Image (cartoon, rainbow, N blue to C red):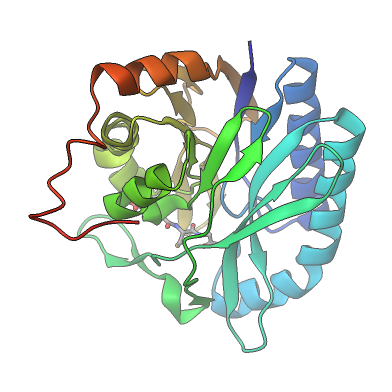
Length: 276
Ligand SMILES: O=C(O)CNC(=O)[C@H](CS)NC(=O)CCC(=O)C(=O)O
């Protein structure tokens, strides 16, 4: 058994509180014997507006990453977590870091697709006003649960990334998220299951959940999906309770799914561009 743990909680603008909750979730995952734990996008904080996010990022980044690295090392567990990170201009990066069980940051993915949308009956959010998009898909990270491809939240809607990461050796795709309630109700689970089925990977999706402030609420429902599309861990809640659920990442099962239905070999690369 190689257990993974997926977490959800409700980050707010109180930085020490968010750090403590993350450390607590890491500890609970390790107590449950997980080898790697997945925390949501923006686990360091959810801010009120662009200026607030910029200011909080200055204060949050150093102490947050330090605390995550310490918790990973103390509990001997790998961690995937979404954070805001500083840049040389007045916008931040939406980063997704992986920390090894030695407490070292071993990978840093910057969200490629930014959430610039105006949903009728939902939210208008223009992420690119305060965030610089990343431009590197990166290589999957070798971890004790398998090769983990890093993405973030809205990237989930761009299936090309998942296929490319699968071609680069990903066995697990991970999407730390803060889905809105309206889009989450309609799309969250079907998108996660679709990515798992079509790329034949495990999908681990940690989630923000509950009300962050007067204008932001997140959908929750963190989950792990197996390569057949079955939901094998599910935080059944959309309130602000912090929780963690577990599932076995079975790479021999993954190999058998790929063998039975070899979709990667069956792609018509003569008809559509080769993905690498
Ligand atoms: O703002 C922060 O600090 C953290 N980042 C987020 O919450 C991001 C950008 S606003 N949220 C999403 O991408 C939601 C995607 C979504 O809900 C969908 O694809 O339907």
